Image 1 (cartoon, one colour):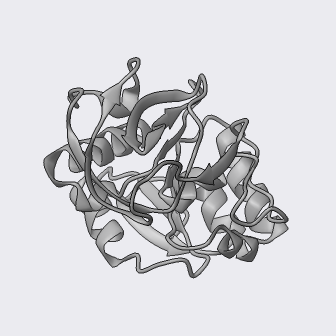
Image 2 (tube, rainbow, N blue to C red):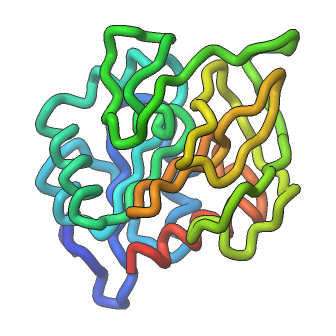
Length: 211
């Protein structure tokens, strides 16, 4: 199968993982494959336009998103605009918003309103470890995932709780752990591929949407 074709011959949906050199993608690719996708890494806008779903991953500083040039940015936004499932993971979730105080001059995608901020309160930062999810409303990403599920975080900045937040958690203060805009734009602040069965269920739910 060519990278960018919507499905493999055995019916697996293709999921493009956007490559902007922001983290090791091996475990994410394995997780998406185990969830039933044909996952491939690409920075080619045309390959991303041709995929059934798009994942924007990432760890580290928000300034790293500046490596996503205008052509790649346009392909991601275009995919979301055509009702193609889009999932931001960790830094990728933050990139869905307008921006972050971590790198004030770097633009987010603006698909969700608001800016990400440094974790508040008398807590250790970066926040690394397992936290529980508090469900706020239903989401296709949360089918089969109960409130109180434990997932694995590693980050220093977080997204605000807005109308798009479907699950929150707290580390010093509450922040958005999962977002869903109701139009197939999703984000998770944690790493689902490192979050046990509940994380895998979330990946399976996303891949199911890509079918």
